[in-house]
Image 1: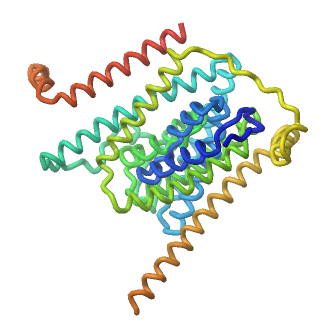
Image 2 (image 1 turned 180 degrees about the horizontal axis):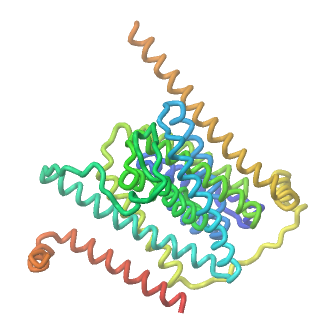
Image 3 (image 1 turned 45 degrees about the vertical axis):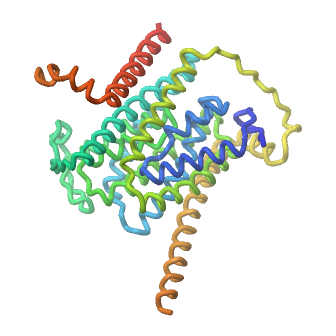
Length: 362
Length: 41
């Protein structure tokens, strides 16, 4: 079942997109990562041009991070002050990232830059996760327990402008979260990812935040970074395709909820090693596609607005005639879907608790 | 460190899975590094 995407101007399989975003959503829920570094390459493999894959995945990440962040807001596990400091750096990083994106787009090398960025990021995360996963399995087999240091001091902790973060119970330089945010924002703008895979380890090992505040704060930061990335991509390149975004958001929100539920009941050490292998396999596939696969020139489909169905026509017209409104609409659309998913989850969870409470009363 | 290097061949023989993963990862890294250089020059 194929559908024509009016903005990306390619036909894609609805079931493939929906199920892949669902599977990536399950992995995200299971491991607490955004999943953008898997979904963007998958979109590219499905025929979506890299520039469109990056922009639309950023919009999808906005919806999932709003959904996750609202859940953490309802549980009060969010450090706003720390989050806003990271966002400050994130804004600068995102602007630098979009500037770099524009530069490489101008030189006609943006597709190769995106592919290479993915290859390296997947290789780095895959290698690190594989080594850590194998080490954990080894330790579990030999029953070795290692005592980890609570907080290691790096040069970044010696920076000036120290301030108190009450919620995290930390007294740290404001530059630490700002620098981390800057790196995350830069990578997010170029690759269309949330950056949780950098942010989460940085929050644990560099900032030293309490574990319970990390997922919520990381998602809170991702909201702002992905809002900026989505808006700038929509406004500068008109590359947000609302039809593609809808499929991605529905699949991933559903997947994330399933993943979070499954994650509560299983030990993820073994699966972590499998995820590492999956990341490396995707990296190998991108490397093959970039270096060895025969280059085929993609046929540019010239479309007539009158040939499109009413919904596609509306999306195309809105993107062409009012790019600012279209960008804002994409953001509000993703936020609404994300918040709705969080409240539906809360409602269903309360319903379930009530059901079990009534059952035990009887 | 020298002790580790001295024991490396016997360690590699002992654990074939780890050796396989190490070789695979090294090959992958070499391919992407050389590929990148070729793409840009």
